[in-house]
Image (cartoon, rainbow over all chains, first blue to last red; front, side, top):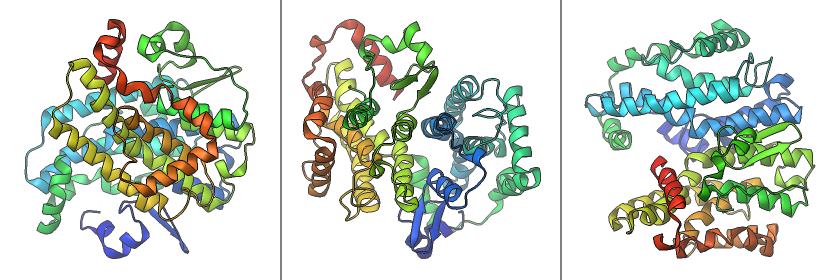
Length: 205
Length: 232
């Protein structure tokens, strides 16, 4: 993302929205992580627990996937923007009050997540992992990567994370999170000044 | 039915003859915070579904649940994988875009002025409207394109969810369909597909929003509007 592949011509043709992720399946192009996950689970007939055929369990996955956008997803990625991307692209120091605001918002969302979605179950829909857990965990790894460990004082959440890691496969999980967990290395990357110019105002918003 | 997601549900259920018991929750009177409602949805948000002992929140989840449970006509959530993916794509994208920006315009044009007693500075409102215009453009170019509906030739949940959100700023007096013929045509098609009378009935309350002035609103309601608006 940093050297700008998602903004290049080829990628733009695949995805009019100019965002990642984007899927190209023959002539069919698709954006939005949730839509792609659902498409793949249907096309490849993945094990039922990912998106259960039981309509009530399925509804619980949908419920989380919907709620996620305006809550966890609204705040978690901002920690990365504020702690890493803004200083990197604009040369300005990180705005601490903004970070506090974001962390408070995230705290509220996490409270609701634990009380409403997770409760005392192993996973969001019950005893098996689903797309809901996957979508949740990857979002929460962002603050972890930039040093805001949301799992630190939340033992129930931490145990859920461990279960998700195991269900997915620890090696695979860490492989996927390698870059995020080593995000400090990003500060050493040389950024094209034109890209800086282009992205700085967007980031500042 | 001043809530967009509630309208989507109402329209979908009525248009498909899905039997339901409509329980009015007066947001303006803070009823969503009552003990009774909290049993249905502890997060104190509408809409919420109670189906026997099964409780569900989030309008999109409820729409999909109803579509499956009552086996509504295929076009609402097409079984064709790619068409279905188009619906999912819109339903996912809209949260942070159409929904967020339409709400912002509604809050800025209606709610905040009601609280403060005067309209927002024009420049500020202009900025907020511009943000809505940006997502409207994306909607037209990326989701609608030259098709009659988002998923193709037939109306789906995506169109329903989109239109109820876009009616919110209209209720506040910002007629975003005015200079956008493509959008206006799409709107007519969705209204026709849902049923024009039903559509009008569902939007009766919200379309009166712009006529509400602070003096017409009881103080307790103003308090609720205040807490809603400040959350934005």
